[in-house]
Length: 423
Image (cartoon, rainbow, N blue to C red; front, side):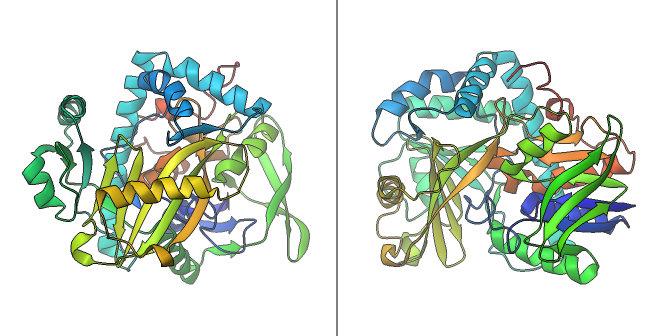
């Protein structure tokens, strides 16, 4: 089968790899000059299979306003809000106010994440290459007794789903992460979680895919569609060689924040919003002071990850449409968060700043599967979890293209679930 994939981030490249391995003729197009130059470029670096959850949670309603009022609060809005931002906030609030839906979506995302972990391990065993990856566990930190109770509840839920975890007291937490500052109550360890440089992984997998026969066409944008209610016949591509129509048997939309407009052209309402996040990546200054693996600081809402001889800290959820500015106060805030947890760990004079857009749906789960046309598949809108869910999502698409029953229940991920004005 001839298949066109739109998008060369980690989702598009893993999808291309998985489909090619099943014998399909695959072409990938992206408007950027290379793979993984948008959301995949400098994300948190965490493959958080036991940490995935919908952003639209009941706790979000309680936390949102206080967070916006605090100067260091993790949630920020650019004012005045755009119509697109208001639409997203209204939809998110509506979903966040449905605890039963949140629980169903949360469980669905965790199950897909565990499947993704299996697929990552299989790939790394069959096609070993270096991307500063590993599976040394993820640690969620607790500063207070209230934090501890909340994390113990999370641990109980993970246990019910068969996901290994264990509570560490203060001494055990520092034994797990010797460089961690002493002011800690403990932490919840999810030992199966992992790390990895998403950009490096995507680049290397794209190289292997290209060597195996996958065609990559960069600086190329999908501009027009020839479609009807049942079938997408061809896509007009505008690239270095001019405009041309590309015919295929099937199409997979993996364009992240760019998916919304393309989906609309196909009659699918996909209210993805670009939630902006910041990261700083710096060389390790003193190995003994640096993190060993990956951590979540729930109080400061930052993620801290060790990537080989570097350390990365990421944070903030800024709703500012496509404003790409690197605001110094945001960078200083996440820098301070790492410094408080791991003082002296990073060479800040050599830090690389970045800001990117997480393709967020208002309810949380990505859009994965068939849309309105019988030959158009969606694999997009993963929010903060694209790196974690990439291999699982890719394998699900390959199964659906082959007409197989997906390995994971996918009701929560239906691309057309927003039809009817739900968001």
